[in-house]
Length: 111
Image (cartoon, rainbow, N blue to C red; front, side, top):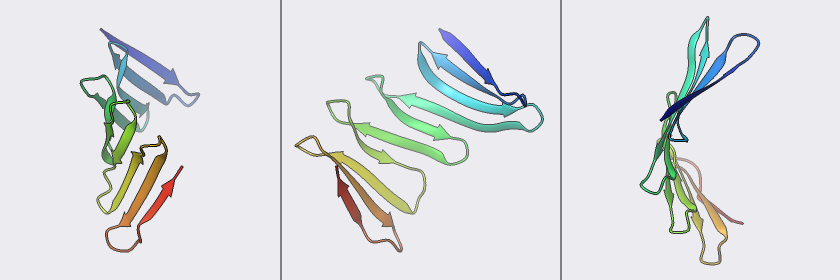
């Protein structure tokens, strides 16, 4: 079923996390005087992996996975920047910043 978790700071601001069957569905930050400060929603794929995170301010970040449940790419909502991460055959992580579509040169880093 559903479960709700709250955490309150001394100024009365609180976070309200909503979980469904143990999975985080949403988190809201709320101030009694100012109203909602932020909201984030989580989505899951058929294998129960978090594959989306939607921030009310910035939009949706999408994650894709390989068969070993490792994140192989992350797509962010900012439209002018492209980043990706790949797991190489040897198991190393290769991060690629393709840069702004208008100004930055491509950059790749392997860990």
